[in-house]
Length: 159
Image (tube, rainbow, N blue to C red):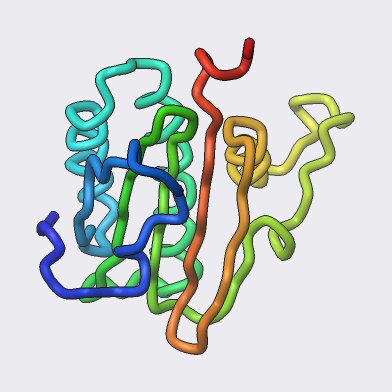
């Protein structure tokens, strides 16, 4: 995992206001074993264990899918990950150079009514990402995908 130095479209966070802080900005090599290194970095960047768990689960799911399906296992690429925090939101941005794919629209929806023994393996990951985050969307700019995940921080939910 490498710190990002070159400017990319995600260096400008979608979080507004003076309270925004970028906690993690890195290039993750597209090898599955690198997800563990990213998880350690997320745990250090996000001291709230529940928030770090949610972020890591979402990152693992989306990065695994990008590596296996979007990039067809190409191990010589990078996924740019940026995590920002404001007083009210956690924001996670992922940018890749895979073919256009919006997991929130194009991924098959799991049939949650099936018995656990009747369900096909897989298919729950994107569903979990949608449940863990308050806002999810994906954009394609002609060169790659940008996935935006936003989670409202708990202490703001009661206000």
